Length: 206
Image (cartoon, rainbow, N blue to C red; front, side):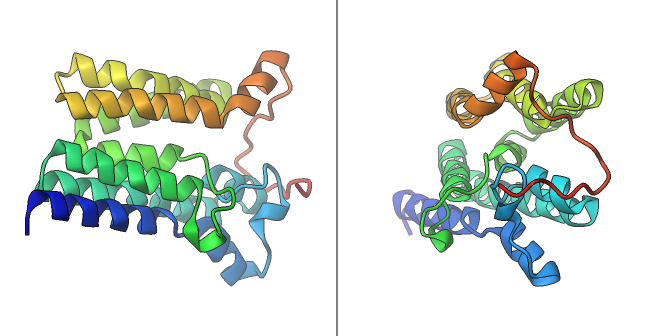
């Protein structure tokens, strides 16, 4: 099988895996509820944690990270770094607009982006996780931690001498995360963004 065909299959598979709405399905399976009725209305790990606590939030984080990690790792291993970032990018697209939900709004791709970097550039991914946890620990804003970490990705990749596909992917991922957090940026500027609380706090219906 040629590298081109393998890459196409990995990209397709990455999108399908990224489209799996773990946050929605896990909550619905265990509680019968729809996470989209609460908080921000999306299916990502942050909203799941806010509405249902860490019992559901932690598994969703791990699943969402795996969405990016698996296709990116396979792409880098079977073909090259470019295939890895393309497959991981496809997983991000799937998480954002899942085919299984009729391309309706999904999550904001932060955990899936982190998983992709762990697959193609583990050191960058690990440092990004440290940055996210540090900013989040200091300010308790998941959105701020995501924005700062996203902006750091291409810088870290360049400083560590990662190949151009990884650096370019870092820049593209940063732009994507910033665009998906436009509303959060507005609330941060106004001082109206909600701080994160670790205990379960059922959010106001979206």
